[in-house]
Length: 173
Image 1 (cartoon, helix red, strand yellow):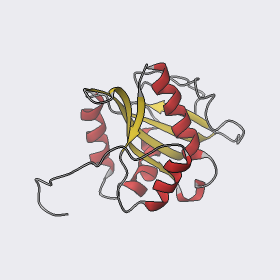
Image 2 (cartoon, one colour):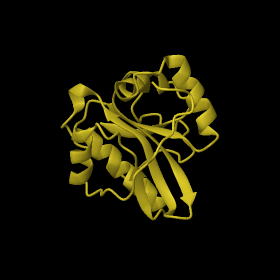
Image 3 (tube, one colour):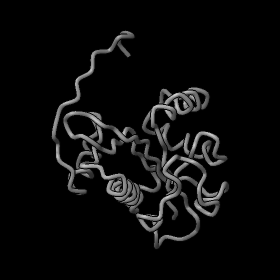
């Protein structure tokens, strides 16, 4: 397995969509592309774990990530024909609370890849990225209904530090 960044123009981008849709079923391919194009200018990045036929290095070497700008990077990383097993959407945030953090907005693995180390590989990769970017923390939001994900995050030494409140402005879902 190979962990690699996937930029908006990367030919591997469509492979991320079916995996991400398991977490965000409201997305269409067009909406995903539109959100990523607009979000990329605001720092949104996506990292994928691709099945390249090896199981011994799901992390891609943790520190051996592709370009920080979200570009295609290493051409061998996940090749355009490799199946995507997991996706993380993330961005660098600077605020008065934690100062500099790497914030994970989406983290999902395919149902077939769960409990195979893909989620751990993504978090490990992002943790190393956060360290490389001099972040004070790796943060993420998780829906209150996602109790299985919460157990996973606790196993990965993440704690609950805050509540994230939302007031919908476009009406109920």
